[in-house]
Length: 95
Figure 1 (tube, one colour):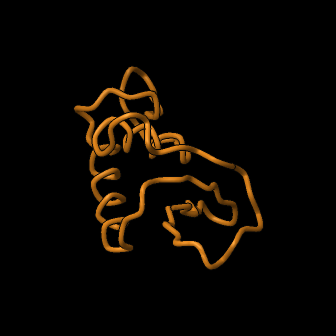
Figure 2 (cartoon, helix red, strand yellow):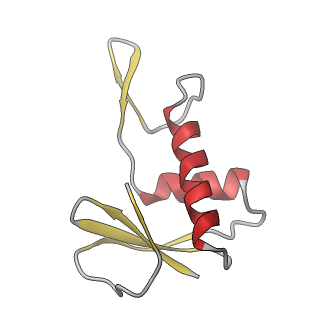
């Protein structure tokens, strides 16, 4: 299934196996908990003076997390990015 990942006014499109909207929200919450956990070393930290200060990410971070913690065989795929128009009938996660 295709899913819109919206950041402010722009969006990306990812594709994942079919899930309910409730499951999508659960994935989003689990992803954000993992992403913001300072004990996790990933490339999405903004580091200032050797300290994890903030986060800088797009849909590729979610795709990476899904493939590492939810799916086997790279089932989550980033299809398109930097969109300002998309199919509004697709399920959407807002970040």
